[in-house]
Length: 416
Image (cartoon, rainbow, N blue to C red; front, top):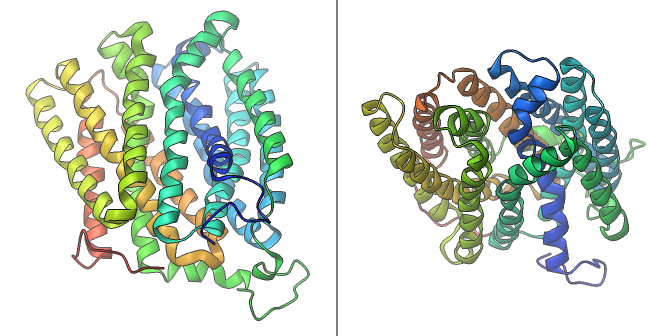
């Protein structure tokens, strides 16, 4: 199907994109709304090592990895909606628990559980998009969803800072509970099932000639050279993103002394990704997913090399205007890369879109969390760790894409 406006699907394209973006943005909101309050949170719970603040983000990502491993495959088997509703319920309950945590360890445990619940809306949304669309239209819808999703970091840090100023560092966690309830209510009332029974493995073990057995789904994903290659490449790019997110508060505040202006600097860089998503939704149908994403990958790597050289000259502390401008341009390229890499990865796997989404989400989150944690823990009061990481990670992504495409870049993809 190529449209959301048929009789059995009550949502218009606008409402579908808005709901999909809300469900997807729960993860970004759960991370970014906490960034400005990390120092207050650490003080409130007696955390002494400044780098330990990063575990507030990393613990959520750890739960997200676990949840994504099972959410998509369960949705292929039991349907999208049951898994989505259970995941949202877990997200809401754990967000409430986190907001009342009395120790750092209990907060980390609740955040991990919150990540497990938050995996379902993220993965199910990608599967639902693949259920409804194919080819470049799918890439266009994903770009629109990602654009709205990426807008969250533009305002989330400011929202977190505002809430904390008015009601303390626990207020952002209360806000996540409320957003989870809104998401569950909207999906419950409006979103229909998009994975029909004949495409799911029978719960009771029945068989169908049109059903791909659950046990074969993973092998179907692994056997797709395109899927595996672009999942690996996307994992490297998410390592860049998470390294930046985990280090940004310390770089902007501790190194460059931005103070209350941190949410503005962070949000404007996030805006670059949103603008890239809007541009991608307009050009990808005409130019193709590979042409756009490959050129953007070269742009990201080239900028990373330039920034690393300048950073070396300035002993890890380049002028702020130069660092910020380079990051803005890099994350504009990032916005052109990730949505297209996602679309290329899942395109060959319509019959197992849920399982494919699980594997894609689990791997990119795991690699992003691990690579990002390495970069974050290497913070040394300079921007040097993220400068080096951006060169290494994007360079690896380019090598993987070259191998996957057998050296042919910018080529038109085969129509679905």
